[in-house]
Image (cartoon, rainbow, N blue to C red; front, side, top):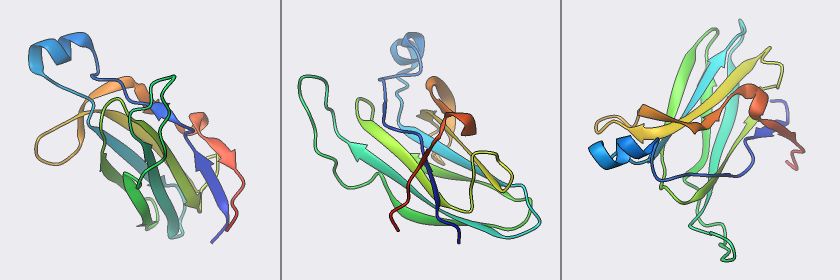
Length: 146
């Protein structure tokens, strides 16, 4: 496996997709969907981690706790897609990291992240918050120490 790693960088999760969703329907931002697409004729493998820091509004700081999603292996056959659903908590800070057969040119495996209010049954984002959408172009390349 290649040693490429990309990340969203840290991002803060606001209370709700918008005020009317919160006040009229009680919807809060409580989930992330990490979407993968294998564009090749080969099987591709990546490892995804979602790090979390609890409420840390300045001047208060927070120590990173256990990950919201411990390192999870995603294996996709040729031309397959999948979604990894991750429960989150509003007012916390998160960072999605992907390591493996991926690149920022989307020639192998493409990834995006959508966050918002999830449906009651499956953890899939039902009402997206535009501030919690990360296209592949929004990810940054990192050095991988492994």
